[in-house]
Image (tube, rainbow, N blue to C red; front, side, top):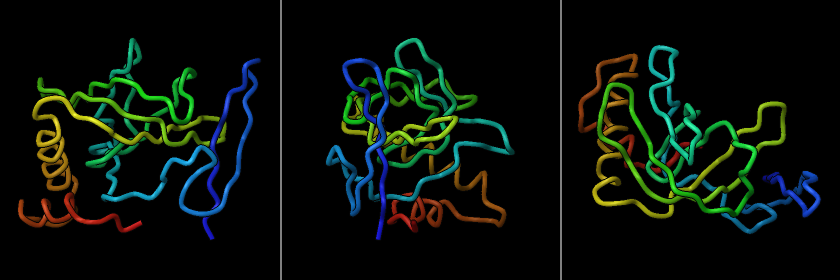
Length: 157
């Protein structure tokens, strides 16, 4: 059994927590990961960031279809937003739209976001970033083909 939690904000600004069983949360958004998600750090330091409005946030993790980051106060499950992803030492950016899937209910809330639309060649660029990230983070020597298989394959969780 899977129990999922979502955070809702009512008209008064009060935060409530909804609990549901199954593969989707109370707002009906799918929480199942399709692709493997990778920790967005290299040698213990953040290496991927999201620019959302005026907020510049280090990502917690990143996959081909989504990312997690510290939840900005204005995030509400089901809400869509425009994002720009940045990678340490690179001038190119990944741009698109995402939807807030879920917000954790703890002292430092994290938002899980699903990418719903890429701009231009951003989808291919994100794939290339993740392949290089897997190669750079691997504890053993790994080929680009193996890294590509890991990035493109199904989630192990």
